[in-house]
Image 1 (tube, one colour):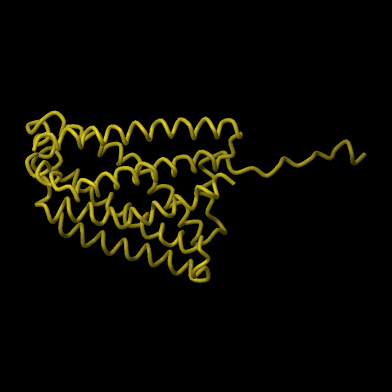
Image 2 (image 1 turned 45 degrees about the horizontal axis):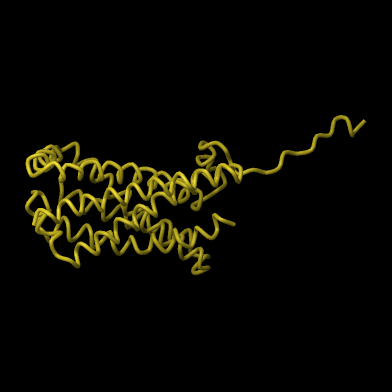
Length: 112
Length: 133
């Protein structure tokens, strides 16, 4: 049941990622000169719209990846208690990863 | 007596072994799609973590970031990046296929869509490789 409900979120975040990843890749690696130098990255993230999109991308990709890991584990038929533990652990990992990403964005933006 | 030899069958469980993913006989295109989706998904999770680690060099200043980007220009890394593009393309396209399946759209065409996802990702990977290598 939990897996089925999660499936919808996995699909929605996946669909969003198709769009966001296309933007992320084209913007990062073609439009902005490849972001191959530190200065290019700082200049790129100084646009508020770009920053907002990248933050949305960060949260979506972390959610989608960890929901995928959760599905892999729960598919192996663990007990309800273990499943809850896995979910809780992945939530912590997700919060840490998004927190790390936001911190990195803050460091880069502060360079402008 | 029958009752002595009879054993209640074990309840059917989801497969506990990862190897069961690869038992593809008789599972057709959807079996292949399932395995490839999982494998590319696992690869992408590891890549995401690696990407986070590489980008942590941004916090260490221009020199550290520019140095790691120079190191990434090795042909071996480019080759891995081509593999990454293939994984992203297949996972994304097959993900769209799975979404359509879940919405009960084009279920009869699921096999054709799998081959479509495979062919399109292969084509775009070749184009990307030609541009990058």
